[in-house]
Length: 212
Image 1 (cartoon, rainbow, N blue to C red):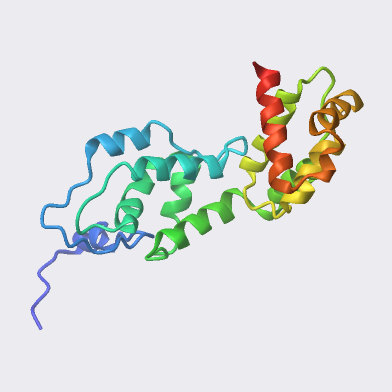
Image 2: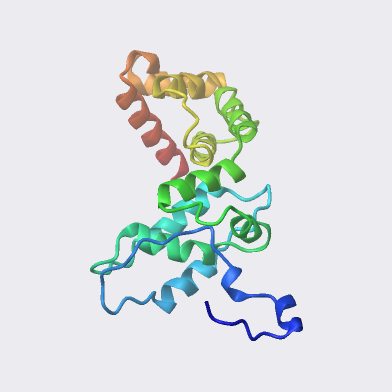
């Protein structure tokens, strides 16, 4: 046992060795592994702060798209994502990650699930699911605008768990009567007489024609 030669005031000084991270990044086999400064800069341009108005699903989609622009031999996708993700956060969201238990995240799956659990709680899922299943076309809203708004609600809540057949039926039932008549005329009968794929394709086509 070696002697401790520190003076008394040294014991009160903070020690860097006590600082830990909530993320454990996978080892990288590449000899010259280095994160691209361009990638980090790209990620930092659209940071997530943790405000209620922000969309955590959209943030993850954009983040993954950026990370997928780089491939490094010997470095897994998890190795890159786990190292870069902290740069995509700021303010309260950055504090949340730093305050998690040390070594809490060893895979991208566990980190992304914890992120969504924090910023996309069950109450928010229920609210968006209710908006989807009670969809109604607004006054003077075109078919194109209604269709895009309906799809946007689904993008905001990709795990809404509403089956495709019910989505099509909900959208159709929420349209104004005159629009329903136009859609049924285009099908040569009734939209509900088509398969899910055919009905969805028809709505997409009619919405696109309406836009143009």
